[in-house]
Length: 442
Image 1 (tube, rainbow, N blue to C red):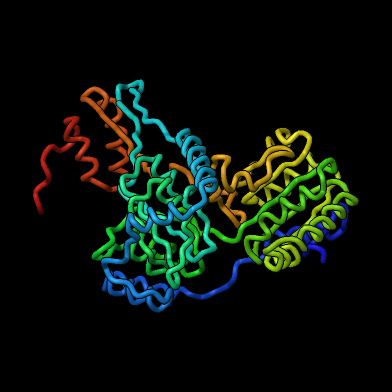
Image 2 (image 1 turned 180 degrees about the vertical axis):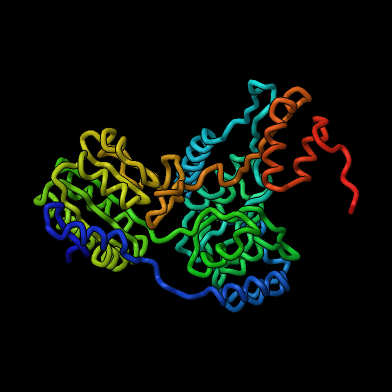
């Protein structure tokens, strides 16, 4: 079967079809707002008791305050059960992710301006961060590394992970990844109740300051509702990839790249932009051939048939960039002869993969940059997860008598214009300008 859409920039209806692609709704419309609000309120009011009841209801696990937390012995047993080569691969990924994110740490700054005012800023980490990991056996240890390591690099003192274990099932590699990433506490809870426990705290779980990590509609709604009580990373939608390819690539390579995202989810999206209609047909055929061998064939096929697209342009450098910037993809792969020339024109993309030998999948695991990225065109205004998600900046200002005299009168004037007399007096009293005592009543 062909993809959902194939169109050429030469077609008279290209603009309309491209607009349809831009505005395509892929996220499932599930109204869980009221249900989530009730769960959050219950956990906030009853703490452990509510979390335990909801875990039994949704995950079929009977817990107690003492068994909410996964023990060090459980983590050690998981580590012993994992293949040594896989653990080595995780360790290499952790090392590379940590090295990349260490380069993101911002520097403090302090300077004195022309009138003698000392100004600057300093960065500090949040005290505690919470990481949500989807549960069961089909979860992703790579996401544990991507979410937890930036927090550690930022200097967060306490990193907490929640992961549901329905019927007691958990991928042991998730626990190994958590240990590698320096997670301090792991709790076997999930859903909106886990987000509530992280945000508000319970008798057994101290609250955090920032919550990151993906989840289902209930988790996403819970993160949205607790925002303000805590910070969050983003509300991420289904995964997406945009591959720009010339006709010098092996079509089977590009097909594999497109399917690397399609296999994530039935509502994931894979888009190809190329400048050769015959080559586009060869890639489409290669996708069909590859689908028949994929273990997740049913998922990938629905994604490709319902949301996949092939856009044919005349010139990749001059025309593709405009389409890319309008789509603002989560993942952008530039499999062309001169990827830098095209990348220079790209303003909106979560992550950019340069050249024929840089498949997006290398970024999912081991390249180093974070794979938690803005989706649904949010790359127009948002960035991927970074060390900065776990830090905040404080401004620093110091005046002496001389520098306050230089800038204080202007500030005093502005305060008076705004009708804020206490503001004005706070400045004027130091400059002996205006009243030095508050006026008497009457």
